[in-house]
Amino acid sequence: MPLNQTLTAFHYKQLLSPAFLHYFIAGAAFALLGIAFYMEYVMGLEPCPLCMLQRIVFFFIGVISLVSALRKSYSCTVKYIYSIIVLSLIGSALSIRHLYLQNLPYDELPACLPGLSYMVKTFPLQDILNAMIMGTGECGDVLWTFLGLSIPGWTLVAFIAIAVSNSLSLILLKKSKI
Image (tube, rainbow, N blue to C red):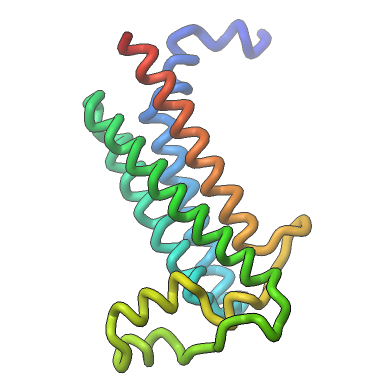
């Protein structure tokens, strides 16, 4: 039997539901974190401050997506969708900043800073956050590529996909409520 005959309108509605999308996004976000930890602990790639911030954004996207998938309230789902879109845009901005640093000439890169554990012990929180957001010299290193994209390039693709899918989900959700 062809696929289009076996999937009923109910199945299509379920596949296009925000809950299904958010289960998928939560799984993808946690899978991406797993890949990041694999790259760090197995492949030996040391994450830079911008990488760490992108991981934090993926973590919050995963948690909010999971909570949204478990909640069935329309108003809560809309709020969660907006939160995920905002986090995706923040993650995209961090990825773009990271890609910018990777494309700077070596002599224009910001200075390298000590490790994060040392900074936490000695620097004020505002200086640590500023250094993490602006990036350091380590952020300019391209340690891994796949299909011509570095790690922040792939995270940018993931953040854009999450933002677009949630935007479309929001449109479908609002149309179904009219």
